Length: 102
Image (tube, rainbow, N blue to C red; front, side, top):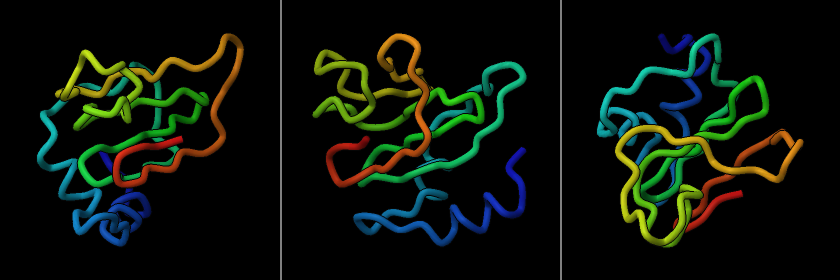
């Protein structure tokens, strides 16, 4: 379930003419990792990055340039996948651009 604050942030987020809410509605339904909550989300042109409260990053959408962190062999990520981070590291923020993200 998306909180009202997150829903408002999603509705306001715009990048490349596509809203994050639009991207989430187009993405197939996928269960969130057990016991995890989304702290922040960023929308790229055709991909979305999710920062979870535990510092892990998940991504869904077009991955043709590796923007979902799954390598170039996976052109589209249909369900949220964990983005590999360096061992022992946690993310504190995510940013999604037109064809990439950090």
